[in-house]
Every structure is written in C-alpha cells, then in structure tokens.
Length: 346
Image (cartoon, rainbow, N blue to C red; front, side):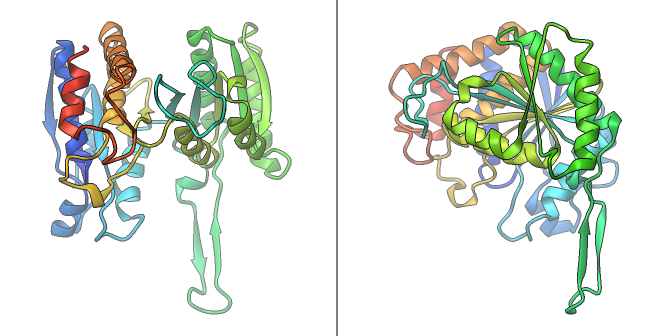
C-alpha cells in the first residue's frame, strides 16, 4: 500500500488532481491518500504558507502529488517560495525531472517534426543555483540601490545531478548521449565546477557519449533539431527556462509533467501548467499533464507495469482522434470526461 500526500493547491489544481487519481484508481495499484489544503486560500486565511511541521509530515509519505500553486490575490513569489521551493529544498529534492515527449496527434509548433523527433529528458539541478536565495538589497528605494542574487554552486550539488543524469541515460538505453547545458564562456566560475564534475563523473560511464552545449545554443537546437537530444543536464535557472521551451514543443502546458526527485527520500510530482485561475470550476482544463504526473509517480514507486498502462492509455486516447486540442476549452470534451476517457483505456 502506497501512502500518497495530495496537495490539490490553487485554481484548477484540485480539478486535475481528481482526474490523476481517477487514472491511479483504474490501475488497481493499492494506495491511500491524505489531502493537505495548503495554497493561496490557506495563506489568505492564516498568513502562513506551510504550517509548522508540514515538511516533517511530508517526509512520512512515499510520494507527493501536487496540483498547482498560484493565487491571483497573493503577490507573486510568496506561495512559490513558501511552498514549492521550501518543500524542494527541505526535502532535498535535488533533481527536477522533465520528460519532453511528443505524443501522437498532439500538435507541435515545430514544422515537419513528429513523435519520432521529440523524445528527450532534461535533468535540472533543483536545490542550488540562483534560486537558493542568497543575496540581498542595500539602500533600497534610493538611487544608490544595490541588489545581488548569488548563484550558489557546489561541486556536490552539480555532481549528484550529473550522476543521476548519467544513470538515466544508461537506463533509457536510446542514443546513450548526455549533454551538459550551461554558459561556461560567461559564467566561468560556476561553469568550471559543472564542467569538472561532468567530465570526472563521465569517466565512470564509458558507454555514455558526452557533449556540451551553451544554453542559448540549446534553445536554438530544441527548435531546429530536437531529435539530436537524448538526456540533458543543467543547473536550476537554465533548467527552468529550457524545460518551459520543451513543454511548448511537446504540445504545451496541458500535457507536460515533471517530478521533483529525491532518490533517497520522498519525491513530488506535478503538472507543469500552473493554477490557471481564470478556468477554475469550469470543467475545461486539460488534465493530461496531471495524469502524466501520476504516471511518473507510479514509475518512481516501482509500479512499472501500471505506469506503462497509464502512458499507453494517454496515447490511445490521443490516437482516437476524439481529443481535439491540448488547450483549455478546446479539447472537444470537459475535464472530467477526458479523465473518464483516459481511464477507460487503462
């Protein structure tokens, strides 16, 4: 029996979580959930993002399934830093795992590219870099205002993300090609640490080909030749940027899912698209990203057969031709109906 913490969150998060759990139910995998009502409404009522002891409580679960965080009445950054980043850092979810895979009958903005061309994974270091929060502001509100945001990079942090990426490349057993993505020609200090870790650890994986690409070049080649990529590893900031580009080329935020992974602890899985408050309660949001997040969670929990069945169900639903678009309100069916439709193929 798997114990799952569920954080439906804000906006359309609760709606897509229902459909993700519907897919879980259809697999027959035994699990139980406890739901936590953290998010914008909780913050507006209590003034707290996460209550005291919340992270310790989450450590007791096998995995976490998150809907979405973001509320129109809460200033940007409060919920994201107070819930998402706090959980990632305190639970040491040092990998952000983002599959970029184009499914059949899903429209991509890339001309002449199909599912055979877009199937790679980005491994993003998830607890360091510029998101670690080091820095500050002096003389705020004056003409002399000075702000700093420190890119905190450790060899330990880079190395464990890189090792995870090498292991994943071997596990995928496709092109056996791992790209390091950074900006070593400008960010020379942090870049040197990443470069050294990449090459030193790479010596332990003689079966894996290594390549390097500047982050701006990677963005260009994502658009022109996505078929060049197998697995990419990068830092927190660059990973945040290129994975959103990846989501667009795989068909949009309606289908993109990700995992915040601690291979030795508890991990958290979520759709990428955000809370989409303007669609709340209308039964129009696309639940496929949340279903794909549940699929990733099943794989992480060791339920490989169930994970494959969920992914194959998503593919069959898309191949049916009944799903007209990945965009909210244009799918040809409502949120709940789409969840039923996918579950019917599991």
